[in-house]
Length: 589
Ligand code: SRM
Ligand code: SF4
Image 1 (cartoon, protein in one colour):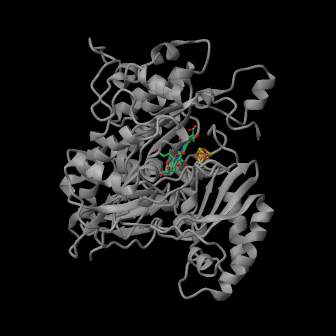
Image 2 (cartoon, protein in one colour):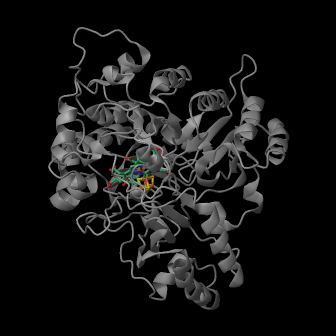
Image 3 (cartoon, rainbow, N blue to C red):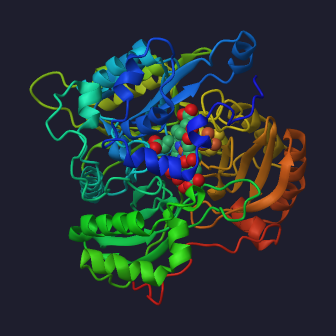
């Protein structure tokens, strides 16, 4: 494996903050010289500024880091290719769309389909010459990639595994409408990828929400439906927590602002932060509030220091009360006191769950969200067979859906009673039934992509997860804890794409084979963990966990979770719990 430093080739990232702001400003509404870059046959890369701009179109230029050193020695340019990310609010696609994405991944990408922690699909390894046909094929499947990356609102995350189907459908509709509302207006995407004719004013479209320089930084929204906090709503810049009445009807939402995970090692100016609950709004106010939060961040966010540009820092710099007042002013909505809510967990519920509408949902475990046929696994083939079985066959559209979860798993949703047996048979045939056999640790573990595609990875994550889980599981078994449902999260660097600071146990990459061991978050996504050991290897990690597990086995209370035990017993002090503060609002029952 290459140990080449993570940032050496990332010229776009190395550019100053002003450069990124200048590039956005001067891009002609995200066009830049992308067309020329794509047409340049001399290199597999894009011009520097276009590497920034293509993100807003849902793609990143990357290179295979496993090959970087070898190619450098051969005096070849890095093995450039592109990652493409979809905009799929709530991660919902039809069986037909699943089949189309599968075909696209098989034709153009190298590493199957990758389910992300924000319910998108990623395709890795698309070469420059095939970017356009790949984009066209994705759009032909009625899926787009616009604003999946970049300093704009990203894919909106929505609770994937509903306990109340009717309310979930409403919540999903609000999330999809907000996603649509916050799309950039530029036609650049359609001109560059879909050959839309250039109109006379091309390059100066009105962007009433974003303006010419878009947002200071990426922006993320999540909708949670208690008791499940699978979206980790307190990690979102803007969160909506659905409030249901006793009959399961949607009353409105508690709104959270200022969550975020990203940090830089050794830089106290950057930190993970849980969102604050700022009040309750009616369903009809979702869009007005969303737009007001986004435009306030657009105008108040720090455009001078990019690493301090996320909403969480804006709120800490300007004050929560001032921020809330500005959102109320811009939206003309007054927040009501937040309503009581209770999250039970932030994981997925595996296996079949009956909806309240007579249909059933089957959650399958997809390790690190990677769907491919490899090393004897047939996940891609198996899910293709299930999609083919559930796809529309005639005049009646199928209600069946494939829903990606924010824990990188997959729900085969809305399955009619008559289809269940066939789905079960295919699950068994293609060994997609890991949820029935795997340990709770393995079922709940999340890892970000990291090497070899992520340009920022300092250590392995996705590729390391199976090995680390096996060793951690063996340790648990030695302490009689095989069934302990511990939430493990691994990230290859402190950016926190697997939301590691909300893991009961987390490894955050520092260098090849070395991680910070973080401990003590809860299993509801309401408490951040804390640094326990810095920059240690696997042996030291397991050695650090060993006595803690022994104590946990001997001293835990009934049903006490590992993260809670570590805090109660004083092993880690993690003061930060959500909702950390609700201004002066009372939570009303
Ligand atoms: Fe992320 C950057 C992958 C969710 C925080 N993230 C990246 C890049 C694009 C690396 C880069 O900039 O060159 C990674 C591409 C790797 C690859 O090869 O595919 C990457 N992030 C991912 C995904 C695929 C991880 C996964 O394993 O599923 C997730 C895609 C989500 C999506 O569909 O949109 C992903 N990233 C997250 C999350 C979790 C979330 O959003 O719920 C976070 C933490 C929450 C947050 O944003 O605060 C996250 N990613 C970051 C950051 C740090 C941002 C910050 O505030 O400092 C970066 C680096 C950056 O933006 O400069 C980053
Ligand atoms: Fe890459 Fe993982 Fe770091 Fe995200 S957390 S930037 S995917 S190594």
